[in-house]
Amino acid sequence: MKICLLTEGSYPYVVGGVSSWVQMLMTGLPEFEFTVYAVGAEEKDRGKFKYTLPNNCTEIQEEFLDKILALRSPGMQENILNNQQRQVLLELVRGDSPIDMAGLVDIFRSCTWKNPLDIFMSSDFFEVIRRVYRERYDYLPFTDFFWTLRSMLLPLFYLVQRDLPEADIYHSVATGYCGIIGSMAAEVYHKPFILTEHGIYCREREAEIIKSDWAKGDFKIIWSNYFYNLAKIAYKRASKVYTLFEHNARIEADLGCDPQKIHVVPNGIHMERFSGIPKLKDHGGTINIGAVVRIVPIKDILTLIRSFFLVHQEMPDTYLYIMGNMEEDPEYVVTCKRTTQLLNLESAVEFTGTVQVTEYMPKMDIIVQSSISEGQPLSVLEAFAAHRPVIATDVAVAGN
Image (cartoon, rainbow, N blue to C red; front, top):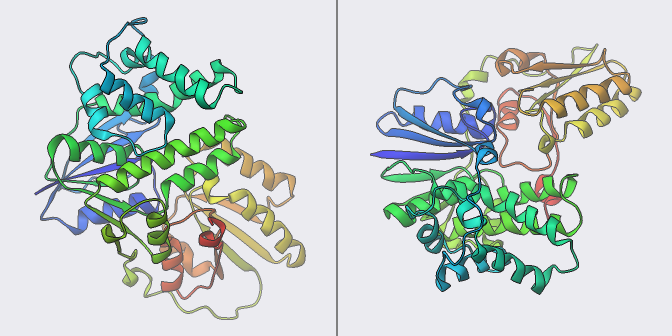
């Protein structure tokens, strides 16, 4: 049996919980053949894998969204779509109903089009954009609305046109673009499509959009609604939907997933890795606080540093280790380090980069988890296995 794993912004380029889960899944099922369809942001990451691929992973198909920037428009083409195809695109732009995957496949997997700009720059699609603008958004600048839709939809159009590896089962780790690819596979090859959702992807994107500077005012709503619409098609087309805990299952149902499809499979760890770590004792002296976390905005490292500043004022004999990948968002890393400097915490905070958790855990007195969105963090489970107390954000409540 050949299983195609669909990833986005994670495996094999980024070390983290989802990527670790993908690696464990493949190594734990050596009797199956795996191929990975990986969606990344930038072509410069091609081939730069953070993991050694297991022997049963026979192929990685890499697709990078910045390749869209090199696409060239053939110029305006007139009347290239039929009425049914125009209606599919109209419903897509309106965003009121789940994306018509069969309709998109009919439009974009035709040999007629060289690239997605053929459709986007057609008179047919321009009229769709103008119609939705007049109906709903005529209080916004039309130029901004047009370019927002271009940024939003071209990645979708591009991926729907790409070659899709044939497999017996398609398994996506999120509902975003890789969820769309899984939905397309179900449509094109009539194969089972499974979705395992760790965090709730569309809500995580919404949290990022709300905080962003690149989306303003009502354009934030347009972007957020788009990612919720991507989620709906993944929920609709998936044969089974797996998540890590009951609260996530309730959210998926509230977002339109059939509750009968949803199954809870909690995360797990190899507890024997931590069996040799002694229980925590009152040792006196410095209190070491550890965060095993990627340094990216959704982990909210800035709040972690500011919180530690308050702790350090009251308890000067404290030390914070921030342990995790610093390569994913270099600008955010610079901001975090600058914040540490501004708060005069340079002697009390260490950014270790990626480490072997089992080597650092014995030194820790407390583990913290500062994320604004999580599935079921492996770092928390590892802390429990190592007999360490955990202070964590209540992301379930924060997301309501």
